Amino acid sequence: MIRIMLAALSGLLLFFSSPGSGGHALMAWVALTPLLLAIEKLDWRRAAGLGLLAGLVYHLPLLHWITIVLGVYGGVHSLVAALALGLLALYMSCYLALFAALLVNFTYWGKNHGRLGALWAAPVIWVGLDVLRARLFTGFPWQDLGYSQYQLPLLTQVADLGGHHAITFLLVLSGTLLALLISPVVKGHLKQQVAGSPEERWPTARPAIVLRTDRWSLALALLLLISTALYGAIRLQQYPQILAAAPMIKTAVVQGNIPQEEKWDQELRAATIQRYLELSESVATGDEASGPDRSPALIVWPETSLPFYPLEHPLFYDLIDFTTRHDNCLLVGAPHRELDADRQLQYYNSALLIGPTSGAEQPAGIYHKQHLVPFGEYIPLRRLLPFFAPVVETLGDFTPGPGPTLLSCDDRRIGTLICFEAIFPRLARQMTAKGADLLVNITNDAWFGDSNAPWQHLSMATLRAVENRRSMARAANTGISVLITPDGRLHQATELFVPDTRHAALPVPGPNARMNSLFTAGGFLFGPFCLLLLIAGIGRHIYVIRRD
Image (cartoon, rainbow, N blue to C red):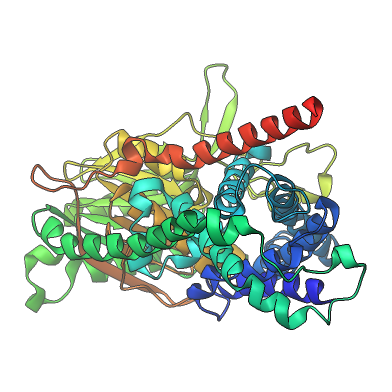
C-alpha cells in the first residue's frame, strides 16, 4: 500500500508542477522521488505497474481538455470523448511504466545489480523515451517534463544548449539524486510498516556502491544542478547587453476572441473581420502622443482568423486596404485551397502575409502548416474511425505543407508555427537555421475551452524562443497572446476570453548581436543521443543475458 501511495504521490507532484494546474513548477524537481522509492528492489513487472499508476494519476487531469475538444466542439459523444481521454492517458502512461521497468532492470535500483548506475540511467532513459514518443505515430510530445519550468527563466536558459530535453534531464537527475540521498532515512522509518515477504521489504543497508564508489557521481550531479542555475544567472545578466545591440521589429498581436461555435458561421464572417480590423486599427493608429513611429511593422492575427478562403472572398480586399493605408504587414491564419500538379484540389491550414503591395490574387507570402493534428486536421484510418469525422472542419482533410517556408516583412524573415507545430522543436530549429529572424506562433486555442491546455500550449511555445534565441510573437484567438523575448520572458500576456491587442519592439539578430544558439547548431542532438544510449543499453543488456 505504501508503494502505491508513493507512486500516486509522484503522479500528483508531476501534475501540480505542470502549467495551469494551480501548483508550482519547482515541484517537478522532486516529483519523481516518491516513485523511485516505491519501485526500489522490485522486479520489472511490479515496477512497471507502479509507473503506470503514477502516469495515469498524472495524465488523466493533465489531458482532460481532450474531452472538451472532442465532446464539446468536435461533435463526438461524451462517452467516446471520455474513452479517447482514457486511451490517450493510458498511452502516455505506458512510457512512465517503461521507464520504471527499464530502470530496475538496468541498475541496482532493481533486485539485480546492473552495470549502469541509476543516477545517470534514470534521466537518460526518461529523455530517450521522450524522444521516442515525439516520433511514434506522427509524434505527441505534449508537455514533456522540461516545459514545467517555462515561467522560471533562471532555470530555462540551458535550453539554448540542449533544448527542453536538457531541462527534463536535469529534473529527472534531481529527483533521482534526492531518492538516493533520502532512501536510507525513509527505509529506517518504514521498515516495520512494509508488508510482504522479507525479500520484498526494503533493506536497511544501502549498497556500498552508493555511499562510496558513487560519491563522485553524486558530487558531479549536484555540481551539474548548481551549474544550471549559475548558467541561467549569467545568461540573464548578459541579455540586456545583447538585446541593446540588436535591431528591433515593431510587432503587434491581435486576439479576436471569436467563440468556436461562432467561428465558422457564414453570417458572422463580416462581423469577425470587422472586429479584427478594429482591434488592428487601434494598434496601427494609436494616439497622437505616441508619435508616428508607434505603428507596428508587423501585425499578427491568430490561426484561421479568416473563416473563409481569402483569395476567393471579397472580404480579403478589406485586409489589403488596411495594409495599404498603414504601410505595414499583416500575417493572418486562414484555410487555403489550390490545385496541385495533378489538378486535384488540396486544402491547407495556412498563414498568409499581406503587405502594402499585395494583390487580391496573390499575398506577399504564404506558409502551409507542415505537421497536422491527428483527428483534428486529418483522420488516420478514416474508414476504421468514422466517428471522428465531425472534428475535421474542412470539406476534406488538410494536406501537410511542403516544408519550412520563411515569410518576409520589413526586410526581416519570419518563421511561422501554426498551432500544434509549436510543440515540435525540430520545426522552429529548421526555420531558425534557414535564417528566420523572428518566430511567430498563431493558434486557435478556443478548442481547449476553459481548461489548463492554453497554459500548457504556451509553455511549449516559450521554450522554442529560448532554444533558438529568437523573439516570438504569439497570437491566439481566445488567448494566451503574448510577446516573448529570446531569454524566454513573457511580455504583456493577455487574459483568456477577451478581445485584446499587445505590441512591442522585439529584438532580432543583427551584425553585432550574439543571438545564435548552440542548440540550433547541433545541441538539438542531445535528446537523440540519450535515445541512442538507451538503445545501446538495451542491446548490451540482451547480449549479457544471452551470453550468461
